Image 1 (cartoon, rainbow, N blue to C red):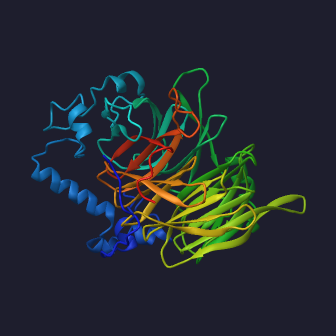
Image 2 (cartoon, one colour):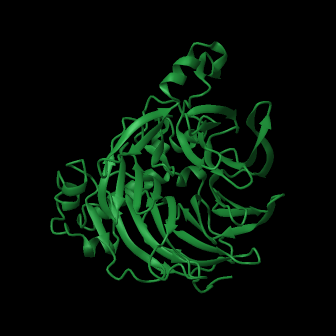
Image 3 (cartoon, rainbow, N blue to C red):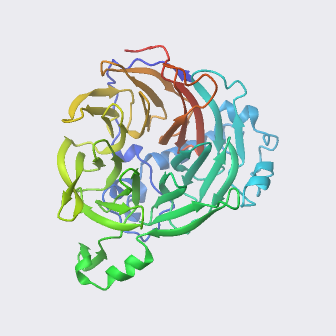
Length: 473
């Protein structure tokens, strides 16, 4: 469903706390020490009776819905797309132990793939709206990345699935924690950030279609062993506990690429920002960047790097020469607030950085030489959990289950074109690619395919256009 919404009026109803709308990570190791945002998201076992985060409430609401509806759908997602077009809707009382899907048998290396409900909107030639839905039988979607006609999804299953035309194309297994971040390089390498602090590196096979294999991790074993023998390479993270500076010791929450510079950036709940060289996977820098967990990182324009944290700050870093090498220096703090910074997106062409917060707002700054605050976009009732920039558009997904589509106009103002509403859980991740359909590249008629992942166990595919009529100024 796509509706227009009035964004100029302020919302006066009671806002929930940050802990009530950011999800927990149920697949995380129970023995893992909590840090930063983890203290908010995953209360300790002694406080389980007061755990009121959105993940818990959402699972409870699903259970209640199932009871009242008589177990009407095995995947418990009430979207009419699933009920109407799912080819396995005949048996609604028992969840099958293995999927009869021909897609799974043909494309998937896993015989018991949990991704068993794949639907598509037959009338998919509209300018704006839902194209199709992929639903997972269990688990939640935490990360997305798209490359060409392929979509990569990360979830709490620890595995990465690969989709092609909404079909289960292939996948690869990880022994690491749930997948919190995915980025793809131009040479077909896939980097995944995990709950247990590891960064895995994968590559697609040139010989076997749909084949992927792990080719390493960050830091590399060689660098890890070399650095570990020198006490100067350790840093104390808490009393009587030292760790190597080149290694994250808590969840890797975000990844960002700057392929022109050949760099990969990783942010973690351990409050550090690390800079990796793509050519040899070497850790170039480890920066104690924030006072609390880093939630988001985004490579920007003019060699700038942006980081957002649960400490409420948005920081700007710049890569500059130092001696014979380069180093990232803090050059500005664009925001300092009580609310956590939860998401970032950068429009490279227009030199604009967008920042989503736990209070539901999206602030933006613009300027090639000096960044100045351009305004605030208000379209969500709850926390903004993800952002994606696509041409002149910026999309924001929130804990209120909605996706707002904004367009940056020529004068720098922004208009809300529409609100995409079909998820029944918080929208956790977004990504967009150009729509290569015929006639879509005409001037002023750029269209985009948008993928959204949610805690309702689904990935939805939308089409949006930059030339849509301005409904709201």
